[in-house]
Figure 1: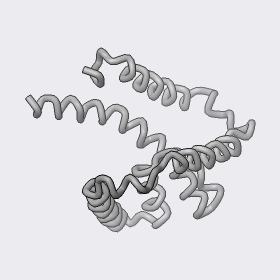
Figure 2 (figure 1 turned 90 degrees about the horizontal axis):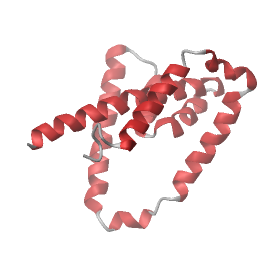
Figure 3 (figure 1 turned 60 degrees about the vertical axis):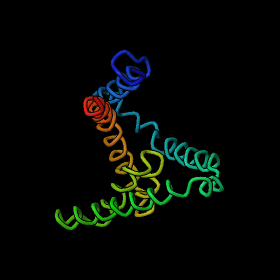
Figure 4 (figure 1 turned 45 degrees about the vertical axis):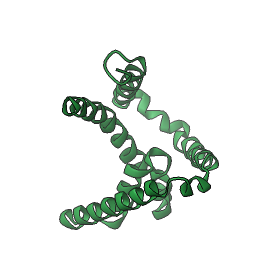
Length: 151
């Protein structure tokens, strides 16, 4: 019930995602002329640092099974990324940034993209935002399917 159509949080996420996507097709997308990427990059570095500050590495020892599940999950993720990259003959850049967009989202994908070349940071943002937008709707749909399966 917390994540269904009656939840205020659900509607907040869906509406904000939809408005953001809609604005990307409007004249608002031209704020780049005012230097939006430079300001956004600075905030992304601050966000990555803030996320890191909240991590308590000692908690891994409390439940090591979750850490092992995470390792297996990342091995499967890396294997699938390598397989798809080979099948579609994608450059290493797209595989690395696409992977980071899936795992770290908009906070870290531009950082990885900028490591290849500073001008590629917007590609990282684009991949991450597309992943967020698609994930918002697909996560809700997946939750509905799982509720049906759970009975």
